[in-house]
Image 1: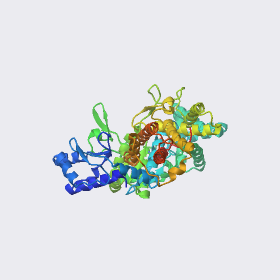
Image 2 (image 1 turned 180 degrees about the vertical axis):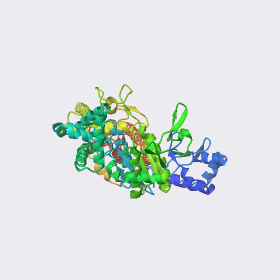
Image 3 (image 1 turned 90 degrees about the vertical axis):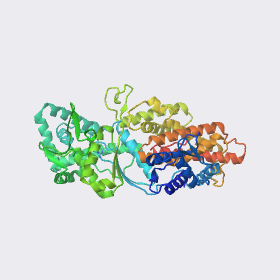
Image 4 (image 1 turned 30 degrees about the vertical axis):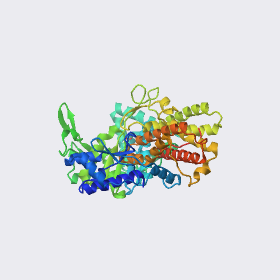
Length: 590
Ligand code: ARG
C-alpha cells in the first residue's frame, strides 16, 4: 500500500474514533506545497465547522490518536487545523525500491472496481470525421485507459449515427445522382455531396422533399433495395472510421449504432406515455417539465421575453418518426439491462448539455431504481478555435477533416525530426514523426481544462519546449539514451540495488513519482485527463533538474550510480505508462 494511502486510512480511523458518526470518506490526504510537507489534510476544519467544534482542538485530539510514525516524520498542525505530513526518507526509498523490483508502479488497482460504460466518439455515417472528433475520441479514450489501468470494468461503446431522417435525402441522391467513380475513389466526399445537393433541392422544392421522405419511409419499412444501399453507406463509412481509429490507436468494445435501437423506439414511447411521463402535443409526443425544479434549473423550460415557456424533449414527431432523445432513452435502457453499470459516461461536446440534462431527468422519472444505482454523467467539452477565435476551419473555410489533420501533423513533425536528427534513417524518422505528430495533436487537446475552448496552434503543440507531447517524448527518449550509452540496463534490473536519496533534486523527483497513483485516481474521479498531462509535465521538469544537478553515469561511486539509474528508469516507466494512458505512444530515441 502506498505511504499516502496508509496515512489516509490511519487518519480516517482516528477521526472515526473521535466522531463515530462522521463520514470519513471525505477525510482525504493530498499532496501539498513542499513548504508545508509532502501531504496535507484540510478535512478536519470542515468537519469541525459542521459540528461547531474548535478545529485546532479537533486536530489535537486526532493527533493524539494518530500514529503514523512508521511512514512519517512528526506530524504538524498548521493554521486553523491543517495536518501536515512529511514522509520519512527511508519510506520514500523503500517505496521506490519496491517499484524498481517491479512490485508496483506507484498506483494500485481499485479496491472495489466499478463497471463503467463510456459512450464516446460517435461519428455520423456518410459524413467525414472532422477535427472536432478528436475531442470526444481522445478524451473518451484517455478515460477508458485510465479506468482500465485502475482495474475498473469498462465497456466502451461507439454510438454511431447510422439512422435518422438524413437517410431519406442520401437514398434519393444515391439513386439519382450518384457518381460511381467518385464513390470508389472517395466515398465519404461523394456521400457528402449527395446529401448537400439533395438538401438544397429539398429546401427549394417541396416535391423533392416529399420524394426524400418517401425514400425514408421505405427504408424504415424494410424495403430491400433501400436497406441494402443504407448498409453500403454504413460499410463505406465504417472503413473511414476504422482507418482513423487504427491510426489513433483507439479501440471500442462495442459499436452499437443508433439503428441498433430502432426496433425498441415505439415501445419506449408507449411506455413513457403509459407511465404519464410523456404526453401528446400538437400531434407530437414529448416529455415536459414536472415542475420539480426551479425554472432556472429546469431544462424543460426556456425563458422567452421574460416568460418561462415549455421546451419539451420530443420523442415522437407528428409524422410518426422518432427523435435523437428516443434513441438515447432506448440506449440507456439497453445498457442498464445488459451491463448494470455503476456509471454511464457520455463524452459529447457541451452544445449537447441541454439534451443530456433532459435525458437524465427523464431516466430518473422513468427508471427511478436504476437511476439510483447508476450514475449518468455528461462529460462535456469546448470547441477548437482558429487564430481568429472562431471555430477552427481550413483556409477556404471548410471544416478540417480529421484524416488530413493527422497527415499534416505527421508531415510537420517529420520536418522537425529531420532537422534535429538527420543522422537517423528515413524509416526511423518517419516512425518518430508519426508518434510525435499524433501525440502532439492528442496532447494539445487533452491538456486544457476540457470545458474551455482552445486555440489550435501547430507551433505550440509541436514545440520541443513547454507543456507539449514532443517535450515529454523527448524527456523519455533522453532517459533511454542514458541506458544506451551506459549499457546499464542490467544494473537497474538488479532488484537488489538500494536507492539512496541525498540531493534535493533526487528527493523532489522521488516524491513526485509517488504521486502517480493519486493523479490517476483524480483523473478517473473527475474525468479530467488534463490532471495527468500536468503531472507528467512536472515529472519531466523534476527529472531534467535532477539530471542537470546529479551526475548519473559519472556519479562518484557505484552505489550512487545505480541508485540514480534506478531513478531514471522509474521516471521513464512512469512517463511511458502515463503517456500510454493518454493514448500516446513513445519512441526510444528522437
Ligand atoms: N452522433 C452524435 C453527434 O454527432 C453524437 C452521439 C453522442 N452519444 C449519444 N449517446 N447521444 O452529434
